[in-house]
Length: 248
Image (cartoon, rainbow, N blue to C red):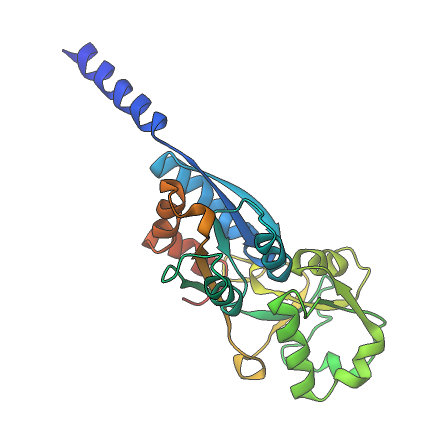
């Protein structure tokens, strides 16, 4: 009887795997760490595998319009998924906000960035890294922040531009730029900035970084794509998202 039960469980597991699928996901670079953890849980819980690609939202938009075979987009803004819906490249009504991002002025050096961001006004630095504001919403938020603080004109000659927020982080982490605007999710651990020093930019200094997910037209009939979007709305995934400093 015990052997029969074990055999039945093994058979069910095999059947579940047989029905599992893959979903190709275009992921905004700021969400790299959370989605890697969520993808592991997703595969363990559902059997479906998420194949992840990371980059800037603007670049993904262009790729999707040109036929890139992604099934789901996890954008760093809410405008791109809406535009893709209007262009017929995404399934109407599938959009939802999976996270609201936070911007941080960060340095890999301890005590370099104060808790009010006053270091921006000192000019005692040679390079400030930002993501390309035309492609990366976090870069656009950084520019908006500097405009509101009245420091953009003075800072502009010293700006170092990353293609996306991951490259921007690398500029600062490597010391090639003394400081830069990155996503809080890139530098947070256990609820605080894990290394270096940083200033979490108050939300009133830039437009909300609402990050929307959307089912792309190529994923319309993909059960794994639908399952991933549903999984992102569940409490297990939401707990991971919160743990990386995002608002929900």
